[in-house]
Amino acid sequence: MLSRMCVGRSVLNVSQTLRSPVPQNLIPKNYVIRNYAREPRSRVASPSHAQPSVWARLMAPAGPNAFSLGKGALAGASAVGLGALCFYGSGVKPGICQEAHLWPKYVKDRIQATYGYIGASLALTAGSAYTVFRTPVLFNLVARNGWMSIIMTLGLMIGSGMVVRGMDYKPGFGAKQLAWIVHTGIMGAVIAPMCFLGGAALTRAAWYTAGVVGGLSTIAICAPSGEFLNMRAPLAMGLGAVFAASLASMFLPPTTALGAGLYSLSLYGGLIVFGGFLLYDTQAIVKRAEVHPMHSYQPYDPINSAISVYLDILNIFMRIAMIVSGGGGNKRK
Image (cartoon, rainbow, N blue to C red; front, side, top):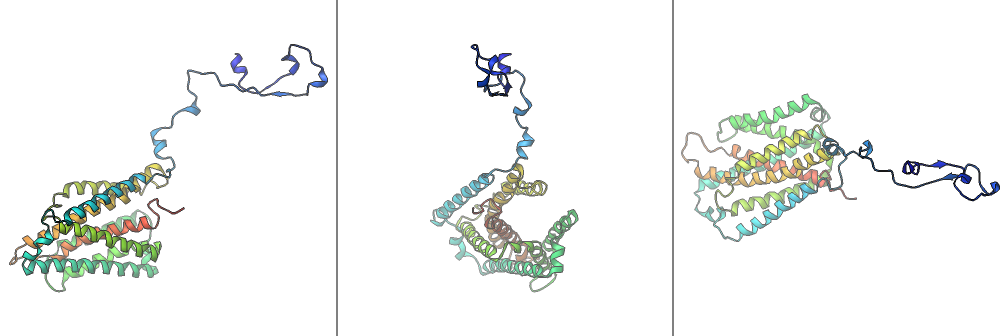
């Protein structure tokens, strides 16, 4: 009882609290006495002190270190890449570049044609993105929000890619080359809203992408033949995780802790995964060019070989552009 009486404020008459009598003229009226004491312990927990649930913690606002895990993983992957470049570049193991002088001319022509299609695909995609961005009618069609727009966009990208891969290749300009141009044009239209990031950010992202692609391609060429061809299963698992995180981030805003974690996985994790795919696809191009018979009923298809590396480069560029523009939690304060 005494402890509970000491918790709150008490408006008492001072003369009641003193043993010796005090003149009434010295005691102010309505004298307020503040008594500070701790609330007595109770076995029943107060609702205000209850721990937040797991869902409340996940939906809480994201902290300043929400992207630290993704940045750390990317830094670790970069360190591994630099170490691999030094290791394979030192010539400890005989690499593909040391065996290139043994290739017949048709193998070199196949690899040259494949990388020619890769460069042309990137140029067509950039031209398509710029054209759609400068055309209000086309840009309004691309920039629409809603489930129907998302489903149609995914359907066009996946469908056009399947059409290109399913057609037979014939030298010269034919139906497959036309379908390839349409596919790269659709990909350029899809990434056209990235032009809002600004020319400076996109230029920096392009240079950074060129450095990343050049470094990873050098690692793949300096490594022994087939060194990275056994990475398909773990890369497919990582791609599934990145794809699931990308879909989930469409429903959860990145301002929450859970949304920021998923966005970080899609951004930084996707950059690591597609870097690994670039190593795999680069060596796969060389392997296909070597093992495909010279005199075969179906000629070597440089377009199908080029599409994989083209999509890797495009995904790497998109993620680097988002990081450069401040979308990866690295805004300067």
